Length: 279
Image (cartoon, rainbow, N blue to C red):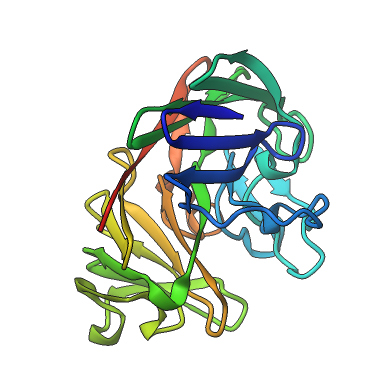
């Protein structure tokens, strides 16, 4: 557990390098992980997405000389999703009272390129920073996508303000089909209730800032390295997800060059800052 003044963060390196809890002045900033959650990352407060995000249609894509076939990694979805990091055991590189660094090494298997990932966590009085990076440890260029998948609580009382000019329309399997101007009914500028519309869509042209507000607190999410935001607001649930990402949904299936191409020895990094305040 990390703590700085009244901000507390609990990590679980062994189970996907996830965040189990994040609280500030006694408020749950992220949805806390239930004690009975077991090994399901979908029950945690936040997990990393690396080396890809969202779904890869049927697990197939081609890049360079490689014809990649990824296996299903969640029983309820026919398409592999969210990468390998959320299913991996991470190790603690360094830790202090208010800072921690986790890492894991992957690839060289169904994902042909070997890589090393790091997560760096830093707590300040009213800001939590997460830095997620991937380094290509192979001899060939590698496509890569990074993202964070935080779960926020109290969907029925929350409002979202974000500039999301374009959206990837999706089919019945949540696979992106085409990019379009965001419909007025899906607009969160100006701010409005998260529960106003049920979404599971990736948005493009984001400016890297989203503000969440409840009657008793606010959270401003800043992701300066991300221009894509996935918004998941399931109807009838008490949580929602606002997920910053470095590439659009479906990039690998559609055209891997829409992802970042990381040279041998190179690194891709994304930073996310959560600034917390009273309402």
